[in-house]
Image 1 (cartoon, rainbow, N blue to C red):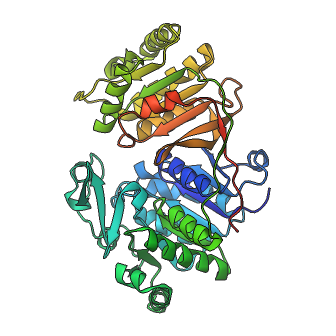
Image 2: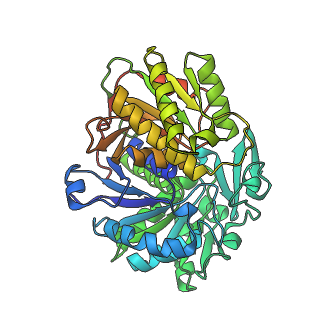
Image 3: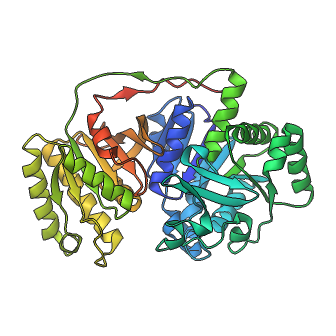
Length: 444
């Protein structure tokens, strides 16, 4: 295997596919593993330019992260990539006790013996913006400061009550974080470089970049690329897929042309199985759209499904009957169901059911809604790695699975977070005809 341009770890599953999409559309051949890759795993993807591992650190305590992360990051350092990206959510989901970004920063710095760490959270493509250190996100056409965001302030695990990211991070780590603000970015490369030199001289461990528009991304990509070119050890970056968008913007500007396009291989449309374990309003809208446009619905009672194996048996039988009609099929939990359900157990049960349905019915395309559900279903299927086929919605592409099980190997699968995608997401995935193959070219 050739030395990749970069490696990355995603602190949740759908966020990891977001990185893969940003890189692949920028012309960087990328493979995403569900477990730390072995030498044999890497040998299956000769010439790959970026290697990632989809993780679950966002749901972990700092103590759990100290056990889980070091061996994964050591395996990624062994790839020899000059840049490592610790990928987080663009809404900075974290707290001192769960999914601590500060602890992730500490572990990554220690594992890679890192110098100054660039941090990029804003991602205009995802409608996330950072100005003077404060994070904003757009929902329903309205942009909110994150501590006033109608969803993130009510997050069930990590509600956001502080939009100033350096202040928020200060509760999670003792690392010193400096800011390259919007004014420095607007002033140009010399001003950005001077700010970074000054931050390093003042003993900063990391530098956080404001992001408002595409011009900022070019400047940030240039700064990160410059660190990589001059460092005597791997550079660690922390942030959303804004890291990749920034690098891609710089690579494109330097190359003087657009990113390489996909070469599609058209085929026949395939029957689609959709699985929704999400309770997010966006997923409810997608379920309603799919049921109204040809999907055959199979309702899932979360309480019954998580009560034991019999619930899985019943769901599998109902799904097989529905698939036998030849229609696209949607397994879905009730909208606005307020009953308490263990989301992890629900995801495990949906994963077990999906694995049996794919094996017994020969389904070749699956779409899953829900961040936790996506990761658990993918692991239940025994997927070892994913490569992007084509875009569907930002951060939720259609992928091709690599697995030891012939029933799963080559499966087309789309995995999306609960809030991701337009109402027609399921029907869009189902309408895609045949597989596509990206034809990336090196950017360096």
